[in-house]
Image (cartoon, rainbow, N blue to C red):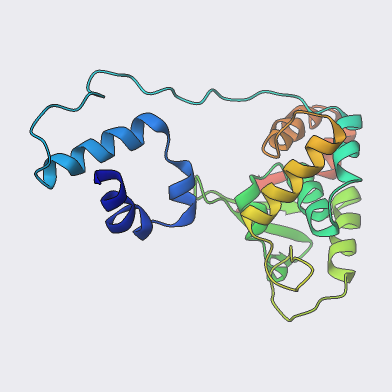
Length: 204
């Protein structure tokens, strides 16, 4: 009864991303708090004093062969997202919100969701090749998003994750999309890669 009321009155009002991100302890604690608020109980929460598990930072390096195995299996929009994420070192959400208008004056201009930091990535080398490929794709709609699905709509995070996860499982590898950020950071230690993918704060 409590869980159903919580789902109906509280959880359904939250965005889908928030609903997916709730974990067991957090959910139970929230349910209990609402149960007390609604008068179902006066007892203390059974979660009191129980530490939540913080997700560990990942430093998984993605080998080139693993990257290629997944890349060859996914759809063209996800290929574009993978390449841009790797070549710019940006998070999935930041890649998906990129717009064609962010490409100007020889740079790809980025505002990171998580930090609010503003960056510019010089469009040279492989990144230029990838962006030229993305921009030359025929589009089913006039949406200005850089990464679009086959219907000409902005590629959603669920489409990205679903397509990527299926391709990853088919390829028999275990890395996650976000691991491309760590790969980018590691590979930029190579001088050639650094020269072809340089992100600098705006205004410098």
